[in-house]
Length: 264
Length: 311
Image (tube, rainbow over all chains, first blue to last red):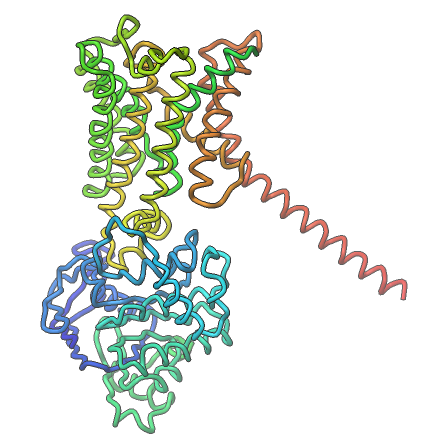
């Protein structure tokens, strides 16, 4: 499904502040796999997702999606098969536009924008049905500008927008990190119903190790731009946060200065 | 102010309304301060004036402004989107380049049209006055443009344009080539600005190389006045509001000119001050509100304290 081989990304190449963000990343995802990604700050998690999304073009290596090479394709040309959810709920929705306008934009993800009416009555009905399933009452607020919604509502809307057209691959970048604990839990639950249960191939970055162990079918850990841990479904059984930290020490060959960095 | 002056102020406001609609598209929809307008307004005036001067049908001469204006916007868009030059600088570069091009088109700094028939003479044959003819034609063009823009903005393409101005990162993640959207928006905007120039030249009876100076500020002033005065939120409402803003701006100018010590040349300073006030007033009022809230909160705390002490 997704095949990354020998991927390198270096920022400020040849300068004093050169930073090797990703080195020799090799990763294969099978269709329907839900992978959680953990690692400390600056480990390269977001860089990896941004390379897959096409925001950054890698310096070396290749990325294949469904057998097609996408390494150098601009981000907007990958959108037909890849959807993204951001940490900041503001990034996932257009604030000045209404709920239905946002949904209509997402309904045409990866499609050519034509000179025809943006929202039809039939689509409005579809939006209402889908919004009703979020149980946030948004189905009655189709014409409300999104800026009037709460962060949690906006993130829920963003999740719905991402799955309106079924993606081949979903990239979730700490999408619950900026929400309060209760809302984060709801959004996580929604992530389960919209992505995991629908067998959408997903890469989900999280700062929360508990979450990383509970969600999905596989866990990878990044450290200094390398994948240092990759545990599959079977091996994940019985794995605890404490054991995960032990594994980190063994794999990285260094004592973590502050375990909170990973736990936070 | 007598009725005749009021009427021609209204007419001029409508004609500048096209400029204002163009500025609205870039400044409000695309969130892009586009200085190209200072060059594309005289561009439209220049091409139309020279065509009429050399005997072309005024109607066709006016239409010629549209593609040229679009080309000017395209230029700015390419400088910004393809070569990552900042919005302000991209606009300035096109604007400065257009100064020479406009001179080339006209062949001289000023082309008079007083002896030539203009598009506004089209209806005088029906027995109505020139001023009435100007109103009818200006209104017809403005209504046509507002309806056209409204319909366009409710299409998939138009929504993608609005989204680009609102949240570029998201639109790219949804598969929209936002660079192309910006170029499209700038082209539409500047074609309207050039059309505005084409009609203004015919209205005032000449095209002048310097008629574009400060147009961006006039456009911004009108947009802001319209939004503040009418305070509407919907897209069609806002499109109408900014044209009303254009007319109100012209009225304000006409009134200011009646003050004895104000010279015509002071108007640019007046406009700059107007826009400055409009741009900073939301921030100042926010600060006042915050200060007020803080004062109220402190007051409440004091009250609570005294109650405790009293009890």
